[in-house]
Amino acid sequence: MTDITKLTAAETAARIASGALTAVEVTEAHLARIEAVDEKVHAFLHVDREGALAQARAVDAKRERGEELGPLAGVPLALKDIFTPEGIPTTVGSKILEGWIPPYDATLTRRLKDADVVILGKTNMDEFAMGSSTENSAYGPTGNPWALTRIPGGSGGGSSAALAAYMAPLAIGTDTGGSIRQPAAVTGTVGVKPTYGAVSRYGMVAFSSSLDQGGPCARTVLDAALLHEVIAGHDPLDSTSIDAPVPAVVEAARNGSVQGMRVGVVRQFRGEGYQAGVIQRFDESVALLKELGAEIVELDCPSFDLALSAYYLIAPSECSSNLARFDGLRYGRRSGDDGTRSAEDVTALTRAEGFGPEVKRRIMLGTYALSSGYYDAYYGSAQKVRTLITRDFEKAFEQVDVIVSPTTPTTAFPIGERADDPMAMYLADLCTIPTNLAGNAAMSLPCGLAPEDGLPVGLQIIAPAMQDDRLYKVGAAVEAAFVEKWGHPLLEEAPSL
Image 1 (cartoon, one colour):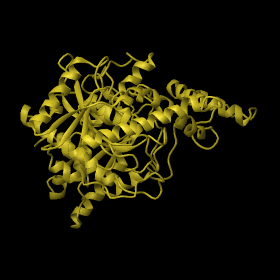
Image 2: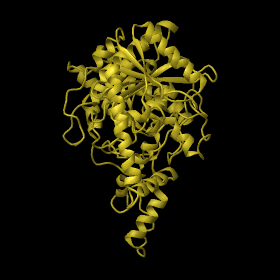
Image 3: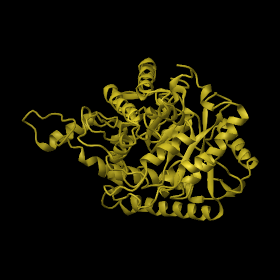
Image 4: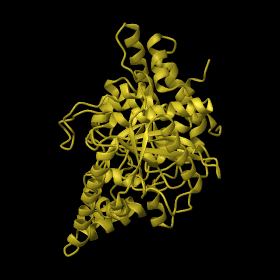
């Protein structure tokens, strides 16, 4: 029998529903895989073995009673350590929340449980989701299963690595400037940033509230669509949640086609700094889309060149406001409280010890950008650029149905290579940031291996807001064409652990 951990989420759910496998068997197989390989990868910060098995037993009991099971019932999932599950440690990759046990479920967590998805545990991440490599985690870096000395992307590298190492068929990430798509690209997996507001942020620890968005991560486009449908939808507990029906993403994934679609290629998404192999695979993907019946349209979006600068003013400004709540007085870490120090001193000591270098860097940058005399020059100007980027997208989508680009300028770089060069690190999100600033939907899926290093390359697909189904329609067509052309899913080439 095929190794249980190599099955897709859709295949796993079908076998559980038919009785060919039990949810407990599936969960135990993935827990065993975690035990076997995660010491090398370090994808998980916390494994909830007993909780996962209890959820699996509940699914099996439902099936035995003849109750109808949902499309992902019994399928294991790795949850990024930024969402709160009741009773399970949530650190957001930071020492300042070490040991914190949330007393409530995030809306996304509750929807996963209601759909009988089995939550295996919490995955490693850059502290407070600030990073592009998962090297900023206070608990150590995660390795890329393709090459353990290289980064798995960030900030959600733990989730992407868990997928690529077959420790889970599904995972959850969050995307503020590319933290779902960029890890997907460098690990050869699928990651989707839904339209801003499509997935509830209630119970997701905030980094940059106008940019943060949770979304599905998987090894196939259909699996991502099935998970998308579970977690999306209006939530009255989230004031930014969109009160509108979820687009028919599963139907789109099952009926992938680009025949007659107009596909845009943006001039600004290539040039200096892009790895030759990444551009080669992207150009081949564009040619493939043309073969499949799409019309390719060249686009010029000049404001995209300013996106990185605007993002690194807006995101740190919102971060400096959101992280003010971590004061060492109400929850989480508390340092220096020996009865001789004031509350202000305790807060200062707690933050000094609890926050890592990248978080401190962004808090200081954001506080400066919001300060009196600088607000209009920096934060205000960045918001104007954000409007220009949104307008460029609007003009582009008058001409095309979707836009494609490389997801990242390079493949996975070695751990430590950019640790002392923040600007080089920030450039990893060059292609993904514009979508967050505009609030559109976007997907990354594998489009081959770079010839110079044999590492995965990601193709990014961008769709207008609330047209998330277009991502899955195009993504499924591209994925099927790749499988037909090379005879196997890309991920089967990943080195064995």
